[in-house]
Length: 431
Image 1 (cartoon, rainbow, N blue to C red):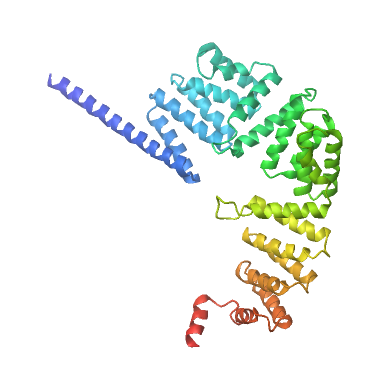
Image 2 (cartoon, rainbow, N blue to C red):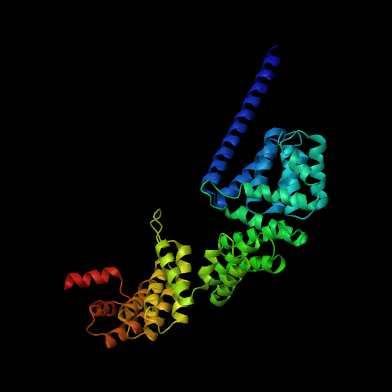
């Protein structure tokens, strides 16, 4: 009797120890998952992957949790774009822990990865069919059934699904979904060029996404496809205006923008946006001036303390285009000076000194030429740490403008060029 009691007690203690160890593992996994979710680092992600693997090898009989951990590991790999690793974890979860309630979801994700990322249609079909045959009431069964629909219908549905979740609560496009959506637009246009309703619309939307992703040259090509291949489509007017905007705003093709504006007015005279098109019919100088005023107003948004980098980039292109096209205009020098200031404000120091030096070289009589020269020297000294170039510019300043109000600052900089701050302070104290 005593022996039985001892055996029972030992078994109970062993079970308690196992459960305690399992709880500790789960707690560690939960903490790592929280860390990865709040502020992921390469090390924290690696630690979490390792902890998942340790749990499955330590507690192989915990089918439910092991299946879920493999699914979560696959999800992390998927978000990181490592699709081979995603498939590896999902396959392992399905094979070794098929009794887990997460298995149907694992098969759905695995089918999606094989179809969309790894281009293995046979394996995608196997997993989707398994869901339909064995889990017809699963919430993801509709996604599995989608695989077996005609290719055009399937892409249309996938596109609609992506579009529905492409923006966050503030209406801003999510970059990752935008990139995936663009791929689907492109895939449809390539596979179904004879669909004269949806294909031009998808090309138009694809161009808009490329503009959002700051790829104006590729966006222009997408809009050009609409106008060349589908000139009578509903997407053509909008593609014309957007292309004109890219030509005029970002690609320095003012003449082409003007031609598109004229084509819009001629082709769509009663269109609601015809006045927008007429903007491109104005003389180039007038257009540049109007756009510069508009972009200067956008430079510092009311809701942000910092400069808007997108508006800054567009504005600097306008400044530089104006100076290049109309170098003898009285505004050219002023726009170059402003361009140097904007470039510096956005942290583009090399571009800033290039513009300031160009201003000094081309417009020696401009009232702010001395300030431009001084600022160039200051950037070389303090931002680019090029003391030789800074010294050269400061010496030039002293020769050209020895009586300028900035001369004392330049002289001070020359005397202390390259000295550490504490040495400069001691010099003040000595004096």
